[in-house]
Length: 160
Image (cartoon, rainbow, N blue to C red; front, side):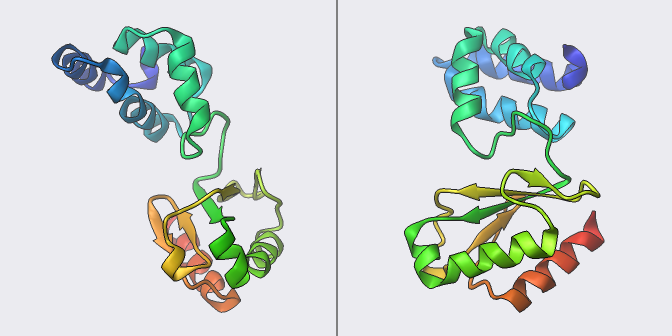
């Protein structure tokens, strides 16, 4: 299991766990560390997190499956979260979704053939004032148009 994280990272999380009253507060940080290393969180990652934090596996699994930014299956090198809230949909989100699906050649929950992008819906990005919006990695992009999407995707492909 430890190949999911290096010994230094494991030791650091064990030290943090010992220093906090409620180890549950570290679940997301630990799952993100595993995800950054592996690209997603396999079952072994959930088990490792539970072991490090001294929690039942089911409690870590509940967190891992609740948050849509924790990936429990393999994803592309860049994950696109498209906001499907009412604000985004009322400001052209449906057209943005159509364009992204067409441009990438995938549907929601799918990864492009080259493994570059996975397209996922998300319930809200908190960018209602810039709707429609999407997030790639940890960067949010708002006021999306077809041209802006094309520019963003072209830029992202260069960094992959």
